[in-house]
Image 1 (cartoon, rainbow, N blue to C red):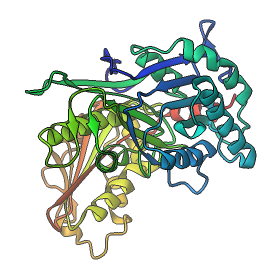
Image 2: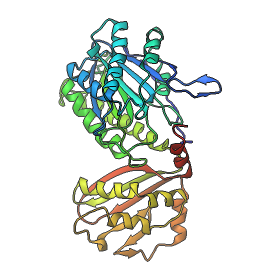
Image 3: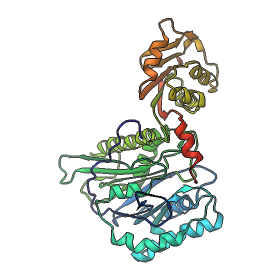
Length: 413
């Protein structure tokens, strides 16, 4: 179960954006004899502009390679086709063929250029994609397209997720007949240590946004949200995050000086942050939602070095799971983070507001009981003050539980 309550929101329709989801048989298992949804289609209006960020893994999956090529062909993509249950990664030339076949099937049904279709896959790495199963359900996907199918789409992209993840916001803007609407869905639960975004995320606004500005907004939003989460330190071969401006409202933003730019920027950032933190809350086997905040750094880079050293430490993560205030594991991670000329006498470490370490050792005011009272919580703030400057960076992570091991040991069985 997720840490805290995750409720899929009531999504508002975005004119021209339609979705559908079906079971194609890529996922073999089912719940209560109900087959799991495993293919999702998103239709975009001709006015839409699309921006994307992708995994930087050297073993980039075939659909991501093809997606980048198609996105480079045109920023006005018309369809996104997504399957779960099979990553189509490390599949060589055959993987490129099947990813192309996915796009061809959609393009033929819609009577458009294949390059206007963006493919995505997520699931087991190294297995051939049974693309014929996807091809067989394309007519059904088109027949069931609708503006209200966001929840079904979110379910269809899930793998080890325990629940669908979504966000919706609506902001009334003076002088505009339409409210600014932002809808987003994401999947991700394990293999989360993105080098750009999360496993899969699709965020759509009804505004018209200039394509260069849209890409810039996406880069910055992903960097401050999806690039600040980690479950297990593993980066996927299939990570991708798409930001789409449907262009079907009277809200038009063509530069940073546009009247509504700051409103849009903040709303996008908020949406990305909510989705990213929901991914952490639903981390595989997670029982704790942990905020790691590094303050007083010389620069962003060294703050993140320390943050990820702590968040990736199996010893820290297992202590969190056990609610064990074994703070020595935290300072050990700080010590090996690789910060040059770190003066430990200037470092302070806190659990929530409880001061644990200062002046190179255990704080005089610290008690084991105070530390344990924090570690027993479901949500914990772990704060480190480096005493080196004025920069702060924050990331979000989880503990490491028995359930995480079970999920990943049994993932293919």
